[in-house]
Image (cartoon, rainbow, N blue to C red; front, side, top):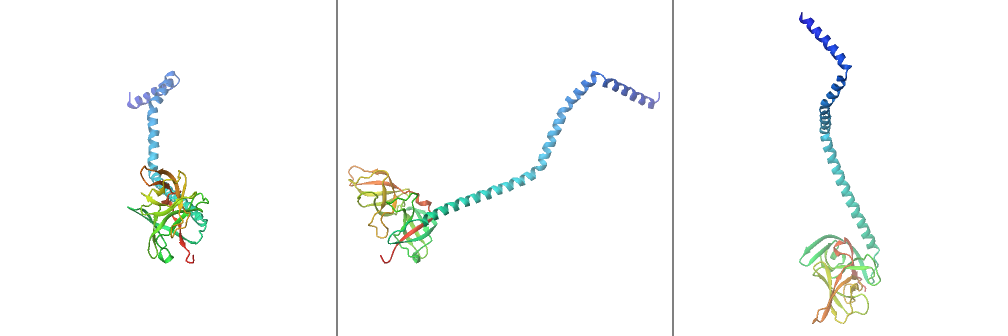
Length: 273
């Protein structure tokens, strides 16, 4: 039997067996077994394809991520700018609407710097001697809720030093700040408001028989040479009366933290008054 004949015979037998198996239950079993055996390989291939597809897009994703970071930073900067402009606009509106003080001229100034030393926080403003400023003048702002006792003006501080174009302002909470003051209500005696630790103001030398309680307003007195009377300094938060002392004192909190202002007024006495 030739080799060629053997090959043909084997092919014929194989074909006959395949036909017989395809019409028998054995074929269904072989199909199920083959699918079960090949399923893990198919799933692995799909996962490999998905991973390769993602890997191919990694550079694009990194570039897109960087672009999104820049966009978020830009939007955050714009949001901060908008908030700052809104705050500035509100402060300027309040400044423009401040009431006029009789016998005093109002000069608008801007805070351009701050300095902290042992005396406390000091403002640097953009007006000086050439603008008619001198040491001791009152620097004011508008209070959130104006009332008749203070005419809507809050004493933020006083001019400390002046140069030709610049001045420094000692805030009322600064250790170097000392202003003659009194209680806003009733016939009260004269006291002195002294800054304490850049946090609050202490009203000192209050007569022992003086009735003072938490919530009372404290204003500038009419004995200040350069500062108008009735400017609001703050409200009493606590009263201290120690046995054996000749005077009582009170802690006074400004209506708004003085260090938050940017635009202010300096009150200059009119020359013909």
